[in-house]
Length: 295
Image (cartoon, rainbow, N blue to C red; front, side, top):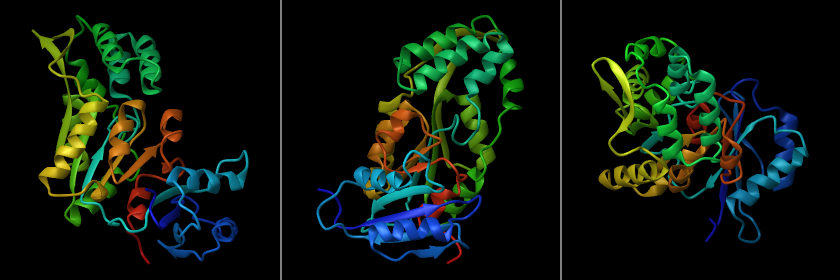
């Protein structure tokens, strides 16, 4: 059953949410906004006259701008759910970092274009993730593993990543970086940002060179979903107390399993499947979704 009431949060960490845009949503919902975060966010509490799914409500709000993108990021969640989440699972590539780490590594190995093409199709959900990952890694065969150190220097943290993780840890949440990328990258980024733990895939390396193989079980969409549910159970949390964020098809099941699943610069598959997107703001938008900010 859909929730009885929803909390809609409008967020723009760049320019703030304009009074005009807020009023358009207020008129549509027939409810008053509650601004916070020095004009960067507004909450609306909305009880529909008839049961309404979150996706339908989000689509209706975005439709107020016609063919133009909304000038804010929109979060739609159950008003009765715990606001501050106690578990965060985040994707790494194109989420916590701006780049696709395997693509950067492939650039140094001289096969960047071929790998990037496969990556893009896999993240859109057009290719089997396992097969696409193995195909990309096979192109690295024979290259020196020291290329990892060079690629690590090119990793750029997404704006707000450290603030998101540090703030959530500050109120006692557990934070986990989970990626279909590889452990040298996940471990490095997790240390830089301050995650409690990191999960990733393992590259085959022998005598200082890539073997072109992925070792062990692959971290795919099912592993991401299972990890979220297992971690929640271990912490005695309900799914409603969890938050997940990612950008690609490999994240969808995890985002759907979380109490709050966020598409960050999401591929079309995620935007077709989730009500909550971040396209304008930085990752601190996820804090505003949880009510954090100067009220």
